[in-house]
Length: 314
Image (cartoon, rainbow, N blue to C red; front, side):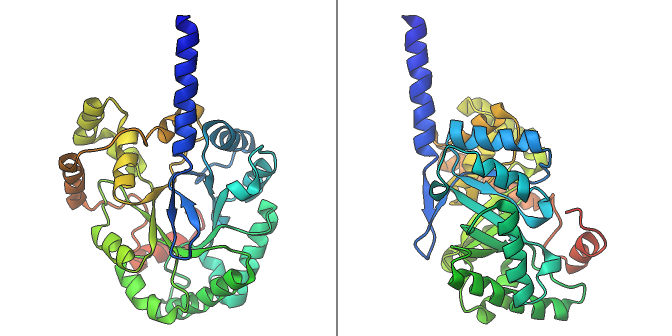
C-alpha cells in the first residue's frame, strides 16, 4: 500500500507539472506563448537532442521549443517534432533569422522558407531577427535591419509566422527601430538572469506590450554558484537553477532553459509550485548591479562585429 500511495503521489505530481506547463503569456496579437520552453542552443547530437525533445514534450509536458538557423539543428528538431505524439497545433516553435540573412526583405523571406523546409513545418509560431546587427558598417546595418523587418511583416501577413519578434534588442535599438516598423515585435528574446536583470529594457517592453523571453537564465552556470542564490535554494528546498528560473517567471519573462539531460529537463519544469517572497525577489534583483553579460554584449557594436562578422560560431 505504501508503494501504491507513493506511485499515486508521483503520478499526481507529474500531472500537476504537465498542467502547469500549459501556462502561457498572451501576446498583444492574442496568440498564447508558453511560459516555459526547451532551449536547443549548442545541441547538435541528433540522438541526444531528439530524445530530449521527446522527453520534454511527450513525458514532461513542455509545449515550446526554441531553435535557430545558426544552431545548425533545425533538421534534428523537425524530425523529432514529426515523431512526437503531441499534435503540432499544441506546440509553439520558435526559430531565428541569422545576421547574414538579415540583408533585405527577400533574404529574410528566403531564410524563413529554408528554416521551414529544414523543420518540415508549414508555419512557425514565432520568428525572430537574431541580433541587432546586419552589417559591420553601423549605418548599413540600420538600413538592412529596417528592410529585414519588412520581410518579417510579409511572413506574418502570409501566415508563415504566427508572431514575429527580435532578439538581443536593447532599449537603444527599440528606440531606433520601432518608429520604422509597421508591426511592433511581439517578443524580444534577451540574455537575462540575476546578474543581468534588464530592468530598463523590461520596463520599456512592458510599456510597448512586447513580451520578454529570457535566455541564459542561469547565467551560463555562473548564477548557480552565487552564494545568495545557493543560500536561497537551501531556504526553499530547491536547486539554484530553479531559483533563477522562478525569478525570471516572477519578473514576467518566459524562459527557455537548454538541457539534453532528462533529470534537468524535469527539474527545470518544477518551478510552478512555489513562489519567491518580495524580499527575496528584491535581493535577487539587487545582484543586477553586477551587470554581467555572459554572451556578446548587444550594446557594443564593435563586439558584435568581432563575434559575428569574423566567424559564425555564436
